[in-house]
Length: 196
Image (tube, rainbow, N blue to C red; front, side, top):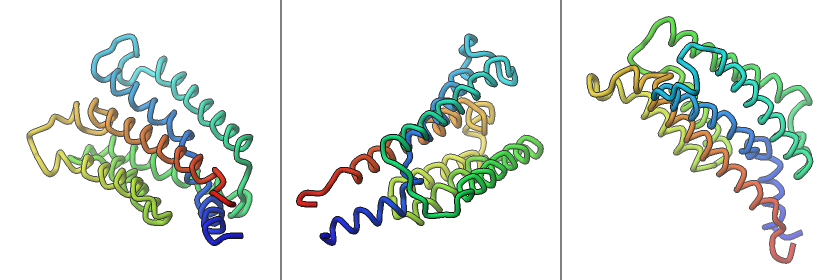
């Protein structure tokens, strides 16, 4: 096998789980919808009203599962970790995320702890897998999360704080664009190289 082909196979097997970008898109769309709800679109419910948010979250989880099944059917399975490791890592990440949400709601700091958490995780993932766009998205999320601290009094917490319109919109767009970029990179990497 050619060196280029071996490098491609090595990259796919090492980064396969991280490149399943369509699994991120439902989360991004969920946040974008919440942003427009916070902008005042009454058809999307009100902040704190779970009659709309809970079914939307359930739909997001269903889309996440469907995206996972799509990857399994289309590209197969790569097992680089023990069988239950992705579940354990997923539970740890969800615990960190919801812990940051709970802490932010309780303490109400001037910066977004949730945004800092997401930004730090994206920077870590980008550095670990050498994906520049993930590093850039993480840096962007870190910067956005610090805006109220960097420019005090210029943005209101209702619009720019966690769960505010701008924060939800930027987070949703970041997740959606990043997910599509990851998916595109996987599809591109899976195409056979010339002469391979």
